[in-house]
Every structure is written in C-alpha cells, then in structure tokens.
Amino acid sequence: MTAVEVAGVGLHRFGRFDGSTTADLGVVAVRRALAEADVGRGGFQAAFCGTAYGGVAAGHRVLGALALTGPPIVDVEAGCASGAAALALGADAIRGGQHDCVLVLGVEKMPRGVIRSSFFPPWREQAGLAATPAYFALRAQRLLADAGLTKADLAAVCVKNRAHGAHNADAMFRSPVTAEAVLGSRVVCEPLHLWMLCSPNEGAAAVVLRRVDAAGGTDGRHPRLAAATLRSHLPGNVLGEDSPLAGLVDDTITAPTTLAATDAYEAAGLGPADLDVVECQDTDAARELLAWQELGLCEPGEQAKHLAAGDHTLGGRLPVNPSGGLLSKGEPLGASALAQVVELVRQLRGEAGARQVEGAAIGLAHTVGRGANASAVILTR
Amino acid sequence: MAAGPVEPAALNLRADGSIALLGGWSPSSGRYHFPRADTCPYTGATDVEPVELSTQGRLWAWTAVTAAPPGYDGPVPYGFGVVELPEGLRVITRLTEADPARLRAGQPMRLVADELAVGANTVVAWAFAPDPSVTEGTDATEAPR
Image: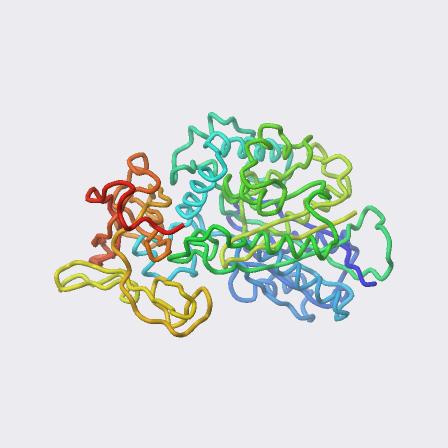
C-alpha cells in the first residue's frame, strides 16, 4: 500500500518584511524543507506552489532562485486554502504513482490594509458590498445569536490564541493579551473589534512529501499524511465564503469546512474524537468558534462550555491553534495552510517546545476562505 | 445626466426615482434568486423567468462598516446587513441605519434608493431602511420558516 510521509518542513516566519520579495521568502522556506528532507536538485519530480497574490509563476521565481527548475512547477490559487490545495495535488500525484517525491510550497506578501480581492467586480466595491470584515461580522453576529455566545467569548478566543502564540518564534504577534484589551480595541465592524481579526501579512512555508511503500508506523520523525482534502461550497448560504449577493432562507446547507473534514476523516479512517491537536482557520475569533462545530469538535451551540472548561487551550483536552493561530501569526494566504502543517509536524515530532501538546500523535489542520475553498489535512505519527 | 444604477443587472431604476431589485424565478427549481441570472444558482435550472423582488422584508443580520473599504467612495460609517424577503431569499444590502444598536433581529425593513459617490460621479445603489409602517408580527412579509 502506498502511503505519503512528510520528509521535511520549512518556514519563513510570518510578519512584514520590507525589502524582501515573495521569492526571497519562499527561498528560505524551501531551503529549510529540502535540508530537513535531505533532498537536493533532482530529488523531487514536481513542485506545487500555493499563492493568491504572488502573481504569475511565483513558484518558478522561488525555484529559479535556487537553481531547482526543470521539473513541472504548478502554481495553485485557492484563497486561504491555496497551500492546502497544493499539498493535496502533491499527495495525489504520489498516491497515483506518478511521483516518488514532491515539493509543496506556499508564498505570500499580502497588500496592507483591508484585503482587496479581484473576486469582486468593481461595482460591488463602489456599492460598499465588498468589505471583507463586514461579512465576517455578519457571520459572527449570527453565530453569537445562534450559539448563545457573547463578545466576551470572542475575546476569550483571542486571549487563548495569543497566549499560545507567545511561545511561537515564527508568529508576528508574540505578546499575550487580556480580554479587556481585546474588547478595548476599536470596533471594526460590530461585533468584531480590531484584535479579533487576523492581520494579512507575509511569509512562506514548504513541505517535502515522499512515497512510503511500507505499511505500519513511522519513525516518529516523518509523520504520515493521512488525508489532504479540498472542497468548495454548496450554493445557498448567504454568509458563505463564496460571498454571494443573496442566499436561501435555509440554515441546513452543509458548510464547505464540514465537507472537507468529512472527506478527510473518511480517508484517514478516523474521526474528531481521535484528534490530539488541531490548527484551524481563525481569520476572526468567531470563525474559529464556527470551525469547532463545522469540524465536529463540538456540538453546535456548545462552544461556550468548551471555552469555559479550557478544552481547546494548551493543557486542555484537545488544544486548538497551539501555534497561536492566524490571530498571532497573521495570514499570508498561500503560506498559511502549509504553516499549519509545519506546526503539526513539530507537534507530532515532539519538538514544539513550550507549546508542545503532550503525546500528540494525530493532528488536523483546517482552512476556509474565498472561493469558497475549505481544506482539511490529517497527519499521524 | 441623472445617476444610473450601480449595477444594471441587479437594480431597476425607474423614471420616478424608485427602484426594484431584479431577480429570477425558476419554476422547475421552485426558487427565486438575486441578482438575475440565466441559470438558477441553486439547481442549475435554465427556466428562469425575470421578476422584481419584494420591497419589504425582515432584518436578519447587520453591522456597520466604520472605515471606507478599497474602491469605495461613499460615506462612512454605513450600515450593512442581510434582509430576508418573502420570496425565501436573504439579500446582502446596505442599510440606512449605521448604528447597530438601533437595529434588531426581525425588524421590518423596506427598499430605498441610495445615491453614492463614485469618483466625481454619482450612482444609485440599493439599501434597506427601517419600515415604521409595518405593525410587528402581523404583516405578510414575514419570511417563511
């Protein structure tokens, strides 16, 4: 049976790096991943590069700077899931018998300020109907109402993730925050305050995937990629990440995150109860709480109970976003999903330092965003 | 020259200055949609008939945009939300009320024209405004559940 292992990972930390190009960031991540995997020129048969704002042939620019061109290089855009889409393509190419070793990378330098997306026609911007944080805010308001949550619960997510991120040298924000400070930051779009929203920024990540033809466990250094799935939305949800102008009066439409997670659980032969650690999309604090229920980590409406119990805080039953999440790291779209994979690999190897989840053996990474695109990745030790 | 609609496929601007949202109805899928398209966005059916949507609805979600997003020259803050129409549709819309504390779930709303600056020009967008003419809980615009 063909399995896929993570042979090596590399990261360029997330932040703002004036004077560095997208390719510069990618070079750092790729060098580190290839060194970890002990793979050099000719050692991989294809490369898949996730990026949303990187422009034409971003992957070629990275690998060109490293004299690693020659194999096919495929640039992949899938919004916030771009890196995961690249990972899924790479894994499928190995499982399908096409390649033995594949390089997956994600690079991004996001524009500053509110994300401007070519997804929207100009008239929607002119009408004020393309303000991304406003869509997040409407979804947050509905979640608060439907799940019986308050703004204090949103602040608690920020406190949790920023506390985790304080232990992550690769994060953009490394200072813990208090709930009072979160609620004291300015309102961007009610009920979301500035510190409840992640910052678009810059970074890169790389993962080397390799075929394993032996059954059984791993050596503890090279986790298995048990699943990497990508799904788009089913139509009808007015607040879906596909940002339609209208939707149906129907609250039963399955979310793309649930579609991707269900596929991933099935492919890996396990379920949410088996997970030891999760990295999930926290573009805003409410998005993480919604992901808990969409991924099956909790029943709808039970978020407050789990927040109060600290179930998803480091030291709790199932830590979520031990890396600090996007709220600490910031979000470079093409790189963020692969940085989650880097975090899971570190957790499964037991090398996450002060943010280590004790005994982590099974991890899930999740993104969801524009498209809509949702991804789920499961790694096992 | 009079201001035109911000998007002709979504908005009908009448000579008297009133507006209507342009939607579609697919008999085979039994669904309305907005804005009007040749294909029903929920089923893929192509038997779409043009309709003008109801001008009254109920507020389902709302917020206020406090800083001008990219490509937007209109006033800030501005109200932004979702109104449920009796056609079984939830429509993204500007709101004339920019203070979220003055709005509530299920509040009756009515469609109004909203003139916006685009560079040196003016366009007409749609917005929903609180509708004081509707008595709570007794009108026919209550969206089906």
